[in-house]
Image (tube, rainbow, N blue to C red; front, side, top):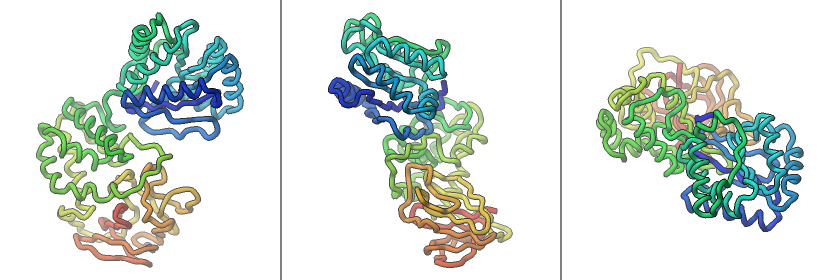
Length: 420
């Protein structure tokens, strides 16, 4: 069971969608989670499978009613074919909120075929016991509890509310029941374990992401967590230096639009993840500040803030492009003659699409915003601002030149830097 997740997502699949008892149970489940401050379950009725979401642990909650529900579920699973079977097998937990003894045989078969853990109502349990059980189970799992702890807490609630001795039956690998579905502490992939003060900063960063619904975790959100949170020894000088530059940190990404169907990327931008190679294990605030300061200086200077430009001894033609800021901050685009860079999305034909795999997108980008001719030479489909040697100018539309260190502002939100 993976713990590379920090958010719990519940997907509800009504096996008997047209029956009032199923509708009532789905409404009850949504109300219970909403009352606990959690997101309501996402609907799934077969067909296209839900997209994978980085940093998210997905639980599939199957709901059915009537004595024929297990048979209808078995038929639906057969109809989904190998693709559905593989998707379900990769999930950490399946909840079979379906009555009847036949569902246990079905769940047992799925576990033997490689599916993860399964929980289902215990035969003879009082009415409502499993609903009480799953309510607390989900709350505990979302808070990072071990699966066995969440199961025990759910059973305790079912005993108090329904008088149930045992509300649920567990099927799965017993050795993995002592692991969580989601981690209590967030940190970008590639970062080593850090000291408590830095862990709290990362927790605040993740909380800032969720509060603002930014759709990504980047240096900009980390900066806001530093500036707006309580002082952290060793990091306060950096926070003080960032406060006058708040507008530059928020300038671009807050104008990007969100695609609801695309899951948020909760793993961190490429630049934030790459910093992990320089973060010392168990580092404190002062050690983290040494890693973050040059990253912020490079980002803020490139985004038009008042940082001094880097001195480049030799003017070299750009051969690659680096994304600055936003959900793809730090992404490097390797270019060949004739390559095009533009807006991502269905039906787009650019070789390098921007924002194609993120929740955010820039509606001001064109489908072929850039055509790369050769090192240092490109064609802009629309005018763009360029910052070169600390001075700003307007390039395009049409053929123009780009050198190492130059920054192209394609729009107010999308910035690219020339690399060697």
